[in-house]
Amino acid sequence: MRKILIATDFSKNAAHAAQYAARCFAGESVHYHLVYVSDCHSKPGRKPPKLPCKGEKCASNRIKLQQFNVNFQKHLDPKRHRADVYFLDLPPVEALRKMVLEHDIELIVIGCCSEEKQPQLGRFAQDVIIRVQCPFLIVPPKANLEPTATLAFATNYNNYYQSSVLNTLMGFAGTNALRLKVLHFSKNNPELSAIQLANREFLNEFIEDPEAFDEIHGGALYAALDEYQQKHPIGVLGLLAKNRSFCEQLLFNPISNGHASVFENQLPVLLLHE
Image (cartoon, rainbow, N blue to C red; front, side, top):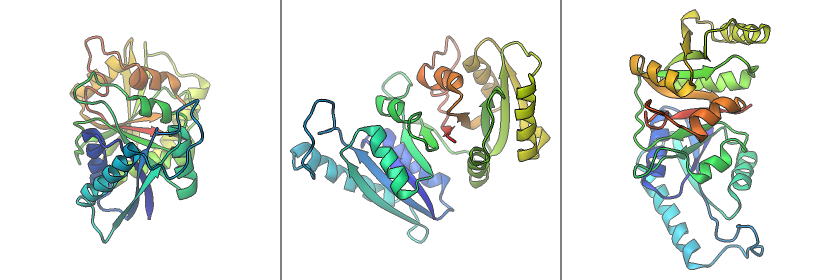
């Protein structure tokens, strides 16, 4: 049984992210862990909490968590899926690390980008997606799961790829009938270095599909990706967490300058950790 964590703040976008995950894994046997991370007592400078907290805010949020579970259960098959709730009064990174270690979590699902605001990662997402060593599925508010779409893995071939990372990438593509595309980005189409060639060859041997490889070029990654997206619709974008340059450009500072950003294109992001 797969073990997937869904983080919630009870927003509409968190509910949408949970529904998106339920659609992704509708045919899989999954134990969902629905997690709310409270900041009631865990802010810096406060005294250690007396748990469980009996304050009105915490009491209200516990009820909201139970209702979130009730609503989420409507999207599950009781023969294949189960869901449990966890109310954690810890700093976000510590809370998710605890869950990953204690429950063998293999994927964390989070929503992002309120529809009313400029598309970008929220504070919670920015805190956890790089520092918690677990794959993340980051879901924008209007993301749709299209069975004929592509899972595009953006890379510059500068990083070595662990087999576990590629298994997660290919497994997600297979589960959702997505065609895998490896998109190599370069600014001016230079020749690959020896390290890049070796990393590309490893990908080629692992994926075993020459047509899975494509090139995108331009002065900025977000622009090249948006131009590719207009011609070849992408369903999910795959990124390597240790490729900090790509993460910085696409996730943390998604400046578009006339091009649609990843989140403006409503692209879910599969962020891969080793």
